[in-house]
Amino acid sequence: MSNMTIMEKSDILKIIGQNVKRIRLEKGLTQVDLVGKIKAQIDTTNISRIEKGRTNATIHTLFRISQALEVPLSEICDLKNSI
Amino acid sequence: MSNMTIMEKSDILKIIGQNVKRIRLEKGLTQVDLVGKIKAQIDTTNISRIEKGRTNATIHTLFRISQALEVPLSEICDLKNSI
DNA sequence: TCCATTATTGTCATATTTGACAAGTCAAGA
DNA sequence: TCTTGACTTGTCAAATATGACAATAATGGA
Image (cartoon, rainbow over all chains, first blue to last red; front, side, top):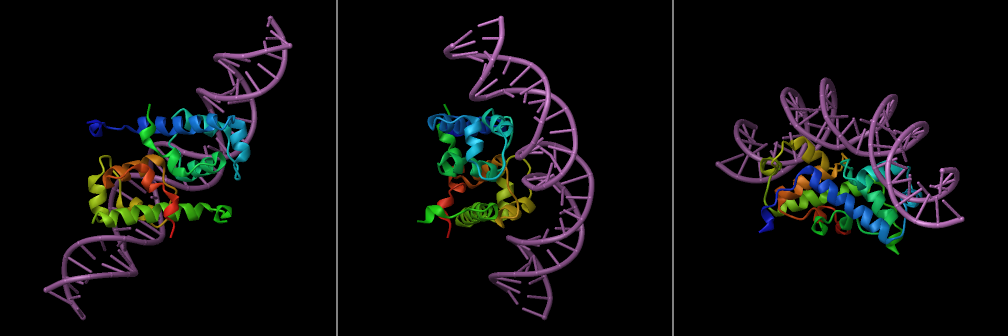
C-alpha cells in the first residue's frame, strides 16, 4: 500500500507549502496580510519560498505562520493532505 | 483563557523536543537506535539538541525523525501535549 | 566501586534559512 | 494599454541548523 511511498525532501516541503497556501487562501489572506499578522518580523519572500517548497523552514517559522493563520501547527504539518 | 498564553520560541522548541523524547522512549529506542533507523545521515548530537530544545530544527529533520519513530509528523508537532 | 551504556555539551566547518531589498512576472480591471 | 495588486525570484549579509568528532556527564548494573 502507499505506506511504501518514499517521501523525498522536496516532496514534504511541497506538501507543507501547499498546506500553508491552502489555509491562507481559506482565510482570505494575502501574503502581505499574513506577515502583517505575525508578531516577529517575517518577510513575504520567505512565505513565498515556503509555499513554493523552495525552502526547508524551521519549526519556529512554521509555528509563527500557524499563529497568524490561527490554526494548530500540527495542521500545517499534516502530510496526509497531499493531493 | 489559556489561549492568551504567549508561546516563546524556546517554549515551542522545548515542547517539540519533549514530544520527540517521549515518543522515542515509548518505542524503547536510544538516540543511537533512532539515528540508525534514519535513512539519510543524522547525528545523535542533533537529536540531543532537539530533545533539549536547544536547536530550532527544520521541518525536514523532524520529518526524518518521525519516519524513524513511525509516527506522523503532525504528532511531533502537536503542541497540545505541553505538560 | 567499577564499568558500560547513554546522553549532553563544546567546537568546528559547511550548508542553508532568514530578513531585506530590488527586480521581474502575472492577472484583473479601468 | 496602463495601472495596480499579488506573487515570484535573485542576491546579499547575518544568523543558525547540521554533521562530525571529542570530551564530559549521567545513569544503571554487576
